[in-house]
Length: 304
Ligand code: AMP
Image 1: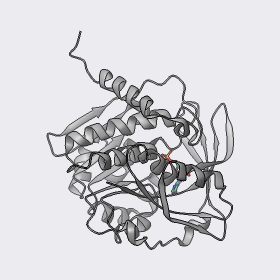
Image 2: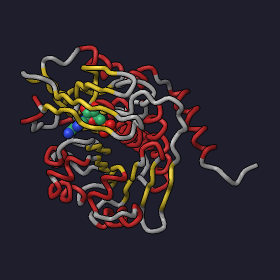
Image 3: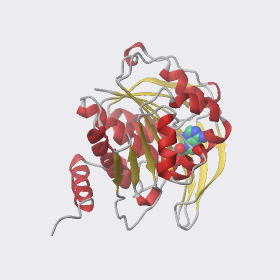
Image 4: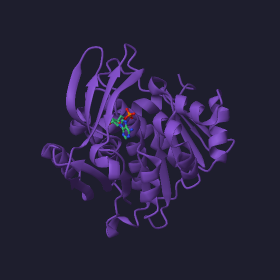
């Protein structure tokens, strides 16, 4: 099965305490589609300006991403700039320029309309709705979001929750959206607002997956010694998870989601080893399988 990915495609300027790089490939859809492509065919929906370097388009092509839904418009590509503090967890947005994204209201290519798995990667909820409106009977819809949309587009985001199966957000965003300090209560509230499943990411501490009241899974984080750039970890996680569900092809249930969360975490752990999508460019299936096995061992405790 295929995955439809809609989100931002960006040129990022990123500063960490040790390094600074500018005009690098970024955006939620870039990370999401490349991550998903390790497991399944991907249909990308996005927009870039005429300044978007062709080498990035070539990367999507090498990953066999269908680019019929990628629009190259007059104007500049979306730009984002962020700076990380010493803990590499705290991040400040230095600037955002929507550019060609400002008036992006895509019409889905006809061949995308029946994509079974949909990943609404982090982007304005209005655009997430607009794309979802055009998909016929999707089997499983995943949405990611960020603090910005909770602040400025809360109502549209809440409306989206009623239309999706899995919401992905980080712990701070879960608290911000629900007003609950307990993540257990927050996840319950979010599930009552629509999605059957909620994945709460906790940065370097892993991820919690919630289903119905007795369905709970805690995925550890891979103990990485050197993180170079945390940007895109969440988008890569979401893409890896969505791709895994599409690859499996069966009806999505909690055990499949548990394995999907681990696959997403494996890909995210590789993503942060280098700036931008550099590490994902060289990633192999053997490396994914190797780290999946380490996650399996990390999660067991009743062994000698
Ligand atoms: P993450 O580290 O998972 O939060 O994702 C970082 C990526 O999100 C960067 O590559 C940015 O280009 C992109 N991004 C940042 N702000 C926004 C926004 N308001 N809308 C869409 N994408 C964004």
